[in-house]
Image 1 (tube, rainbow, N blue to C red):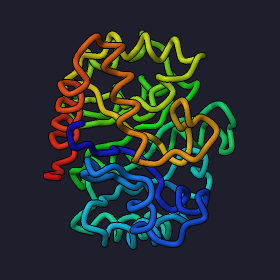
Image 2: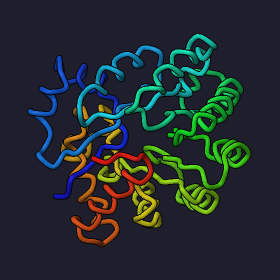
Image 3: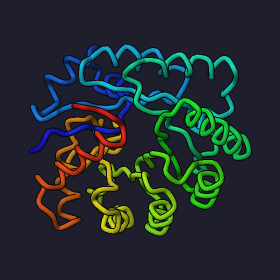
Length: 262
């Protein structure tokens, strides 16, 4: 197995789910020796400080933004806390940000307004954007098309939308990459596998979104970066390519988008 980077996980939630007290214990118990790094995501007010603490670990990087679920809580004070976190030298992106119409925990109009405001801020600080979209394909594409330069680096994470949206995003944004999780191993993941087949290998990222979406045969358990090799192997099968080749390409993509030298 090649060295690998989990490009999207939530370490604070992973440790809580596994009832662990330290990242070092998570790493020693659950990660294979090929682990080269992960990006822990802070996307709500309570996860900012924990993410900053995890980033003191040598192989942990971070990203900060406000998830659409918490859009209703986005205000000047919260924006100031995120701005301070973005100054950390190991902060590699702004996000995750976007639209989620599945639960509507925040009103859709507020979600769209906060999405645009965070896009503008992320661009102003010259960070790649991490995009969350769920059951909001048309609005997500419209907001991105209207507000993001076509050559801006982006990661549409945990892709669960249609292959058609993947095609539109790839055509519109030359540096956009699409992230795939353990869903590619699920029995009901046919549409996500169809998207993975059409996304070129050099436009693809691998992630766990841990603690959610653990791949088979661990489905239902907390996901963590140690599961990445299982997802890489499934993507290789979908692409009908050698797993070592796919793993090397995904690692190169992670480094290129995020500037990580792990």
